[in-house]
Image 1 (cartoon, rainbow, N blue to C red):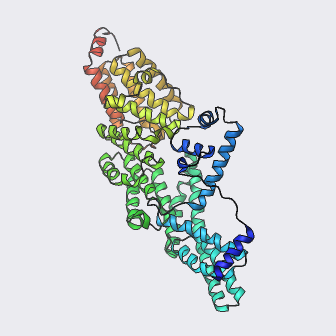
Image 2: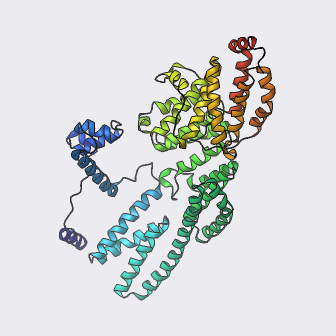
Length: 512
């Protein structure tokens, strides 16, 4: 009872702030504008401020009432952060316990500041035990400081000295983890800056990994292990060693993630590992192995989330590269009919539209064509922003393929001119060598006036290069939706068998 009396005294003395929370069941009774805004965003009714302001107030986003509703909703959502439910299966045991540790630490600090030392001292052992188990070292060191100070307040010399020794050890442990994080971030910043900056830090990574592995062994640390894994996979991606990444993902899954999500004790998202491994399969063009892995792991992703869309994109592209077009069509339909597709940003939607054009080219059906103005897509010259130049190239290539199949020779020439401009100004050879080779093959088709025999002979060397050279591309900016060697085989087949081109050659006997 004394504890309760003390807690009531603290809460009465300080009073209680009015806490506003979003009413998730507001349809039953609540009709406030901020809740209407929340409902409209969640259900996809409002795509932006303009939509919301117009629907709610018949006005523009600068309207005072709309701004007030928006500010009130933001405050309620921030308040909700104190009451999140981490018991759901989508969260790991680590997520849950870290969240609880931070709440408990906050409570202990308030109790000590209010003079309720006895209540805080009852909570601290539980907090310290949990923080140790999950390596929440910033929480742990703060809790140990409070415990040490409490022993000093009570004049308990031996417990005080033991707490000091323990605090010294965990401060060193914490420094080691912080140094591991700093090492990872100091490399990541240059990797994300530019290709030349990547090359400058590449040689540092193996040495850094070796040092962190020793630190992880010293402290038996899962946290440092995580940074080792992230650095190793990053290094392998930069050096195009994707086979090694598959092995690393196998190891980390076996060591830490081979259990139910609610039992995972490391700050590592199982889905992130799945995406890393699936990307490796994609870059290796291993449709069989990657497809089997994707089939097994798709249950980890909640349908309609950002990670699910990322997973589905990798899975789709892998099936396209593996010429499993029927399966790719099924995946596309799942993405396009998902209710959250409308919430994707415009760039993602542009990319999926380009994917759709490639898919229809090899897997034409009413379902895939429904709602898609393919004729307009093919006839309209692309004009994406400069930073999305790869989208222009991808669209020009698939337009070229449709127009060639239809025998629209002058339009084919126009697409070729546009592609040659990109080939000379936008494509660096390290990451776009296959693109350059394929564009060269497309140019030979036009140069040789669609003459199958001459094109097949002239293009043979380039075609063999395509079949031998595999340069991994980053999914999401990869313009090679269908393998170029497959597309070129289609081209040769059209030129050899399509009556339009047989007719064209008959009346162009003097063509070079």
